[in-house]
Length: 172
Image (cartoon, rainbow, N blue to C red; front, side):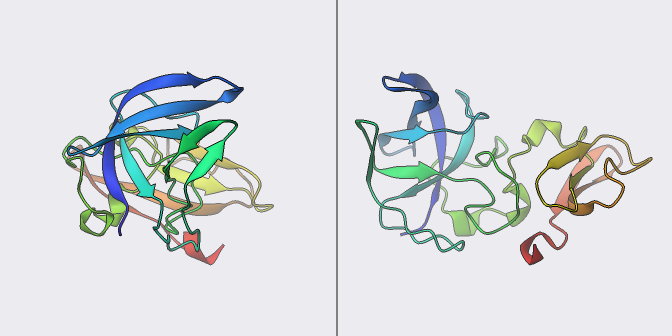
């Protein structure tokens, strides 16, 4: 079983936790309710769902869970969960990816928590040398850390998004 693209159709408050949400997601063929703590989750967002039984590249084995009294049959994934980069926050896929699309059919360049519509604004993601903070860089004039490490960089040509390259992020 492979993780798939899903569309978040609604967000409900968790009855017993202020920092958790219940995300109702659709794969196109079925709907599930998944407990999620990601701050970037929003209605209309396309993201990655790993249902119970999936083993992610990061080594996480997804199991059904009961999170503070609410059943969750899977998890919404970050690029870090997928073993692609150190970005946190669930993956924010571009609109052309159809719900139900298998993870192995989605270009790795799309697997970022930086929203697809913000690629033109965020040129570089930096990791501090102590590996405790990630900061976006909007202009290429200077790095936001004196001794930071580039996690990923977005490339453009003639004002169009081309691809995202995760430079050395897996080596961290």
